[in-house]
Length: 215
Image (cartoon, rainbow, N blue to C red):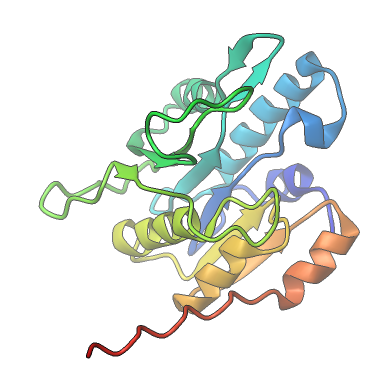
């Protein structure tokens, strides 16, 4: 749906039978000062964490920023808010944006996936990779990538059996929504850009190519 994701979440704390997967926009996407963006980001993280019910998950997929030669850690900002709200961290995964050892200017070669919950526990008997080799397919330039979306949605399925709906603030063109639907969840996306919100209503993932038969 088209709308203000932060306001939508603030009006609906403790969403029943839901988990929230968020990728908050970058300072360049908002077109505001770094100070204003930081205020927005902290408020958005708070709204996401408060919207997830005790048995649900709040999952953040974020890429850090480098501004004027200094890193701005989005993961650090999310962890700060979670600590203030006393919401425990379930896991922190790294997704490689480039092969390890690559030289990259201005952007990190990795993204973060952080999952939080008040009641859920990450069972040590069922380990999952802490480092993912790549983002997966990128349906558009600001997409999180299908592999990252799969990791987040799969975590919800594994750790929050009570979740039947995934809420996606800042849903963009709908990568997470499409992955959630493909995994049997209802999904609700909120997007401030009207054109992207309309596109997200009908976005579908490209089918994976069939494996070549062995000879």
